[in-house]
Image (cartoon, rainbow, N blue to C red; front, top):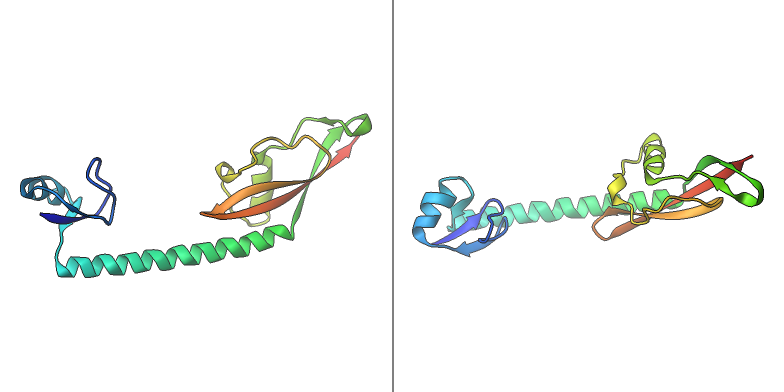
Amino acid sequence: MKVILKSDVKKVGKKGEIVEVSDGYARNFLIARGLAVPSTEKSLEILAQEKEIEKAEDDRKKREAEALKKRLEDMTFDFKVKSGAEGRVFGSVSTKQIVEELHKAGIPVDKRKFIDTDPIVSLGVTKVRVELYKGVIGTVNCRLIGSE
């Protein structure tokens, strides 16, 4: 029996796939638990509509991420750190501090999305890369200002 999976099922398939399973497994397990629906013309139409909606949502999120990327390129975030002679920095600036500054500026970014996770330990401007969406990588300009 062919069924359309409504959610991921281990060793069977992913959500939205059309898979061939035995009749008993389909009726007694997958359909009974709401994990799948029988593959009919109507259910295939619904599946196509859902995929179109997902694609439109994905495109919208990608456009928003591109706009946010351009907005980030124009911004520079200043961090004051204690420094000694010859520009030695005592301490560092972590991704957590960068995320806090981004949130103050109204930019929601998760700290786990940062690609460059090393703390910033040098004075001057440092570019930190962050993945805003699948395939969209923005750059955050962080400037460390030393105070002796």
